[in-house]
Length: 77
Image (cartoon, rainbow, N blue to C red; front, side):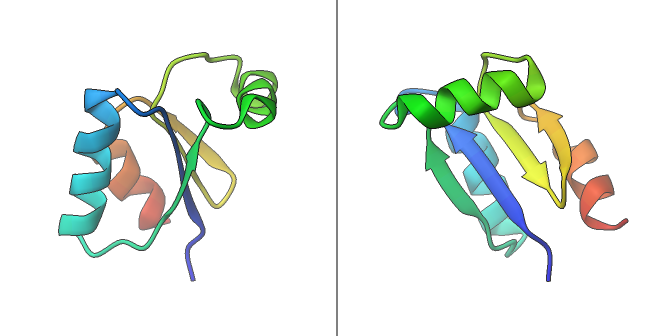
């Protein structure tokens, strides 16, 4: 079972695109809204060095931004 976690904020159009993409592909994911959880935001920046969202973690691999091709590649590893 793939572990997919998407880090988002409330008003991020790319986050919505990413979630829609995953839903269309029937990929189950956990969403973490870092806007509501500043501690998670800190941890995210420490982990990836990136402040922007969306960020997707797939089995320990990080994909920054809305990048369907990289997401599909990571899922098929």
